[in-house]
Image (cartoon, rainbow, N blue to C red):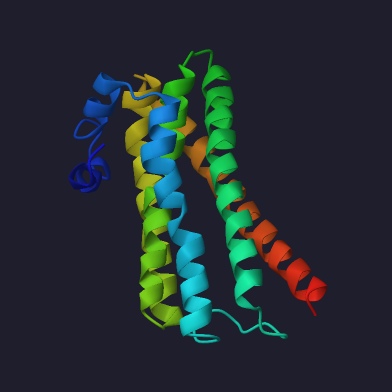
Length: 199
């Protein structure tokens, strides 16, 4: 998947998706070339925003978290992100198999890795010290992730029936929303723990 193909993948079930289905990248390749580098963006940008614009975007914690606390929290968040993609791949397989269909683990992982790309890119908006602008861009990123799921279900999971594809896409979207909100809650809990521990 090239960066240039991503916009087309938001609106098409063929452009970009057919290349992925043809190349059939392994889990290791996707993990190394897509998941790891993009998963680094949110924690790095979070640390940047907290150090450069303290209290401008995120509520300023008391006591103010030190650099080490922010880095540790970012590393925990990064690790959970990586695990979350593997978890979502398993969820996708379970959902598809619940429809009496079979899907290779590589294809399920590909969809789990591609769907959150807009959410991974959205934190670049943290260069703008505005909560409103960041919330707007985050909302657009969620729409983009939902679009990727909807357009990726048929080509990657091999679901031909449009109704069944829509149903599966809805279940994956719901599972993804729950999973990523859980990720944010865990990250907030970890930061709170370190703030208390370092007090």
